[in-house]
Image 1 (spheres, rainbow, N blue to C red):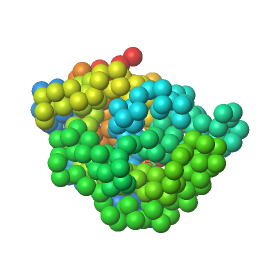
Image 2: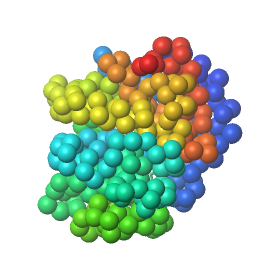
Image 3: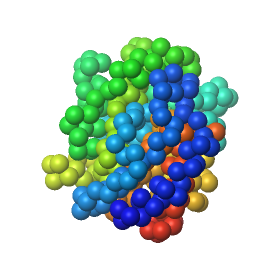
Image 4: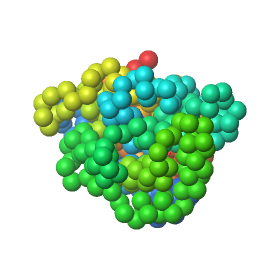
Length: 305
Ligand code: GLU
């Protein structure tokens, strides 16, 4: 396995020259777009690493499925899906175009920014700090890394430049989807996106979903299986932005990407995979990361279809 991962990194490394690191959050543009790393964790907890797997990066949109899990635990399906739909959009992740044309004005799914902000608004806690701590605590548990924390530079950079997310959030309050203090909800969302991880953390998070909510740390199921199924289904239908259909055909693994260039994969009952490759394609996915996953899926027959 180790050799295979190494071979796939070498084979696909040139792809990093065909994309660019995100620049709409200035701090993300400082990432080295030449990096490419992968970590795979199997059900027995065995870890395989290759390439620039030690690189640190922020979870960005890979936070969306995990915060959705917490919102579902906190509120149940009925409350969550009153605020956010279950359908793919075919539009970019930060698009606002359908918000006004759809009736009712409800974000189409929890993997786009509008839907994710609505989901974050449902996290329970007496204060902003308690809400964020509950999010961070879940990330720490499922990544098997009690030291996870936010990258302050990325958080402040996104908070300063997040006008599009701000517009989405204020619109959502106007139409009654968001309730309460919009700036506080946005702050929580920017924080969740800025949690800093490595490929191994992400592979463990994917493994948690692949393992139907079983927490290796405590040896217990900490999330009901059916909730992990809901989240993985969103990862299939909407996890790779508006390239989710093509990715499902070519890779076929429930996955979520982030604009940092990370991809979190959950191969049901088999393994979790974490990839980093900050050079993005035009849809915002790691260009070399996808190539590695296409090869890996074929070599190991990982497609769920
Ligand atoms: N923090 C990013 C944003 O809201 C997340 C986007 C992403 O990773 O897709 O724009």
